[in-house]
Structures are given as structure tokens and as C-alpha cells.
Amino acid sequence: HGKCGHGNRILTAICKNNKGEEVSHILCSELPQPETMVCEVPCAMDCVVNDWSEWSSCSHSCSSKNAEGKQSRTKSILALPGEGGKPCPPHRALQEYRLCNDHICTQLYWETSPWGPCSEDTLVTALNATISWNGEATCGVGMQTRKVFCVKNNFGQVTNKRCPDSLRPETVRPCLLPCKKDCVVTPFSEWTHCSTTCQHDNATAIKQFRYRIIIQNAANGGQDCPDTLYEERECEDIPVCPVYRWKTHKWSHCVLVPDSVRQGILGINEACGRGLQSRAVVCLSDNNHAADVTECMKWTEPMPSLVQECLIPCKDDCTFTPWSKFTACSSDCESTKSRRRSLTGRSRKRDKCQNTVVYPQVETEACPCEMFITQPHGNWSDCIIAEGKTELQLGTRFQGETKQCGEGVRLRAIACYDKTGKLVEPSYCSSSGYIEESCVIPCPFDCKLSDWSSWATCSSSCGTGMKIRSKWLKEKPYNGGRPCPTLDLKNQVYEAVPCYTECNQYSWVVEPWSPCKINSEQNSLHCGDGIQTRKIRCVNTAEDGEGETVPITLCDQSEIPNELQKCNLYCPNECVMSDWGQWSQCPQVCDPSIMQTRTRHVLRSPLNTRSCPKDSQMQPCVLNQNCFQYQYNL
Image (cartoon, rainbow, N blue to C red; front, side):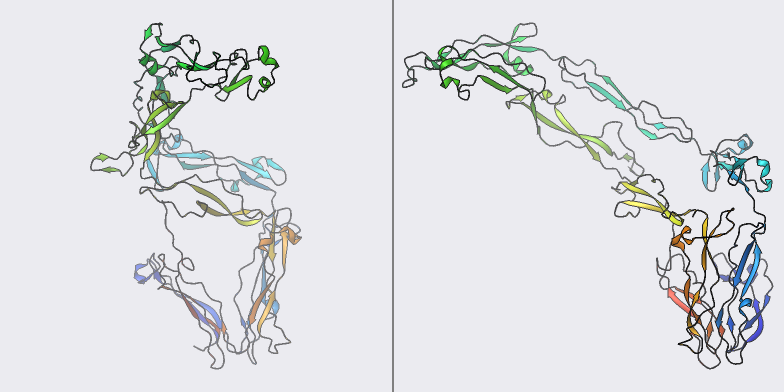
């Protein structure tokens, strides 16, 4: 209220509940007595100095013959005095020093190994019923141990007697014993059905199988899962298909085209030219008895040809030896076979007979290959869940009925054709006479993410940085499954934590800011906006370094402190304000209609009626700007 000079400040206590709301002091158990402190409010023409800064960090971690730890704190001049006002204190009065870390430097210290696994302990068996510790169900309390050893700097492990016993770390601590979980598997499914069709002698044995599924894997030393989850066996009592074969007789003599048809053809007076010859083909059973032709048609390859073309050469024709037998075929369907013939008699001297394009002497053809073509017929069946594969999902039971879902198969009939396009027994294409493909009756599947990746290296090779690990999307949710967390463009979710990398035992040390320097050439009053400077240096913080100054290139360049900053020195008779205080807290549920405030107070009032700037500021609580919400994700 315009008063200045020396006075007292009164500190009173108020009673608040656990929500931070002020309540009646009667509700608090004991109300502290008010405290008083001496204070001074500068008058309009007085010099204004701020409060002491925090003590700086200690210059050394310990004391030795050559160095001792020191801390400093400073005050700064905020406003110059006017005529007749209280002057500013001398420069030396704006700085204070004190000793710190005066204990003698030691070369010996304790080191520990990592904690061992949690194991049962006979001393705590009485507690080992299923209990709840910090809300987590466990199967008792166990003990963890670790090794402790004494280490000498730049030397290594020494006897434990040399380290102070009062600083010896703990070697034993209690821990939670996780409950054992045995492996749980379903019963074996029914054996799959064996085919009812017959089996050829040289065919692969038909097998049937059954399986079971792991419902819960073993954990924490529980009984392991069985090795056998899948069994198969050969089908019994499969009938053998009957055996039939074709038998061919010799070809008849070549029968020429009738004379009436051959009128005008070269060599008409000769019995020569193209004709036909035939042969008999019969069907035999496996004991060489004659059988009905339809049996061979059903159980063996197509009937051999009954008729073929033949040639009786004329006297002017080129004559050849009979074709040789074809060379043998390999088992490969891509292979070929060939046969040869030679010119005979006068034909060997005729030029026209030497033309191998017109009269080839070598024939090559593809080897026969048993190839069958499958053609689907009809529509696909519904998706069939095999017995034993029903998945019982939580939340799928409606009015006592179980909803079947999961993997199954659907079937479709096939027609089987040989390479001539003739319809044959479907078993040549498929032993079942149908094709099948996997299908799925969707269950409500939750979003599935991978396990956490390993932590990436720290983003900073020196000082504070961030390290991240990630999960990536394995399966999207569908049919009402639980949704995924927010994913990035690569379908990943990240977790980031701060990390720190030792900067080779070097760190920055800053000296106090200089007084605010005003440009005197442009300002005769020596007040207003100015510049402050300070010295920075890089020091060795290792025990044997004793804080010595080293080249600044050894310190973390990303954390280099500022050496220059703007400042303001208030002029005489100008209103002097304190720095802004902290912003008030926004509520947990961000509400833009609720305002956040911060305040400052007048350190020196002006002499005339000029007003001081505002002593409070307000801003709305905007989500993710100055207000943040937190919630548990389960």
C-alpha cells in the first residue's frame, strides 16, 4: 500500500484436504503457530537487489591436499537507486562462498553384482501361502541375494576389510515368488476318417491323424508340455484296387485304298500307296483270364489304338529300312525319345531321297507322361470346423449355445480328365475325389502386437538422451475384438525413456552472471535493457582429475551452457516487479473454461502516480498444451 522500509513478514498455516482444497483449521490435528521474518520493502528511489540464488554445485566431490570443494551463491542488482535513495551494495557483498564435500577423497568403494533370481527360503516358509503383495497375487515371499565386493580405483577388487563397513550395500532382500503354472493341453481330437475308395498296389499308404492344442504354456517351473501334440497312423482294411491290363495282337497286312478311289494317282498300276492296318485288343485280369473291356476301361490306362496308317512303297518312292525302336525315356516328363531309319537300294543314290526335310531319317517326340487335368465342379461347401478344433472364446456363450469359430476346411467336387480329354476316375487326380482349402469362421480376435523389441541405443552418446523400443502390429482386431493402441504410419507403437551416457567424466561448470551491462553511449541513465555474460569451462570430474579444467571439446556440446543473455536494469523511480511465479495446476480432466493463473509482486513502487504492470496472468487449460491427462491402459 505504498509503504516502504524495514518490516516483518508473517507466515501463517492453512488447513487443506487431500484434494488441495482449503478447509476449516479445526479438521487439522495441530495448527502451527504463525512465524515472523524480518523483511525490507525498497522505497521508490532505493536500489533493488533480488534474493540469494541457490547454492552452486560443489566444485569437487571430495577434499585433498591440493583442492577443496567450494560453493557460491549470488545476488543481482535489479534497479539502480535515484537521488537520495539507498545505494546498491558493493560487488563483493553480492557474492558468498562456503566449503563443501570436505571429506577426504577415497580410492576404495563398494561394488555389487546384479540381484540373483527369487528363490524359496526356509526362513519365510510360514508366509508362503498365496498372498497379495502390492495388489499382485503371488505364491509367497522368497529371497534374492547378490555379491558385494570392495574395489580400489584404477586397480580392481581388493579384500573387503579395506572398505568402510558402514557403507556396505545390502546382500539379501525379500522378493515375490511367482506361482507355478503347469502346461494345459486339450484332449486328442478324433482320428480323421480313412478313405473308403480302394488303393493301388504302388500307391502311398493312406494315413489318418489326430492332434491336441496347447491352451496354457508352462511357466515359473511348472510341468512342461508333452512332446507329442500330433499323431498319425496307417489306415487299416483299405481294399486293394483290382488289376487289369490290355493285351494287343500283331498288326494285320496293309490294306490299300480301293482302285476306284485311286484313279488318276501316280503309280495307279502298282499295288502301292497309303493304307490302313488293324489289330485285335483284349482285356486280361491279373491271372491272365479274359475280362470284359469295361473293366480295363475303368481300372487301367485308355485302350490302345485298333487301327493305324501304313504305307506300301511304289517303285519311284524312296525306300527306307524300318524305323528303329525309340530310345528309352527318363522319368522326367520333359524328356524326349528318338528313332532312326536309313535309305535302302536305289534310294541311297537319289538326290530327292537325300532331302531330310522331306524324308526325315530321325524322328523325335516327347516321352509319354501320365498327366491328368483337374476341373472343379459345383460350388464350395460351407466352412466345416473339424471335430476337436472348436475354439471356445470368452464372451461367445449365448443362451446356453456355444458359438463355433476358428479354422476349418471347405470342399468342392472335382472331375478328372486325362491328356486326351477323356473323363477318368477322380482318384487319379485326388484320392478323395474333391479338393479342399482352408477357411475361417471368424472369432472375435483382439489386436495382436509383437513382443517389445530390444531397447535401441541411447540417442545421445554423451549426456542425457532418449532410448526407445517398439512393438509392431501382428494382427488387426476384427469381429468386435479389442482395438489396437494408436499406431504410427509403420503400424508400430513406441515406448521412450530417458537414458544417460557418461560423458567420459567431463562436465560443464558455469560461473555467476556478470552485472547487467548497459550500453552507455546510447543511454545516459545507465539503465534499461542490457547484456549479461558469464564464463563457462569444462572440468574433469573423475576422482583423480580433481576438477581440473580441460578443453571444452571434451564436454557434451549439446548441453553447452549459454555465455550471454539479455537482462534489464530498472531505472530510478521505475516500478520493479519480481519474476513470475509458477502457473497454478490445471484439473486432471482438462477444461478450457477453467483458467490457469500465475502471479508476481511489486518489489519497489514508483514515486509518482505511474502504475505498475499487471501482477497476474491467466490462460485457459488447453489439452496437450498446458494441461495433460493421464490414465491407466490395461
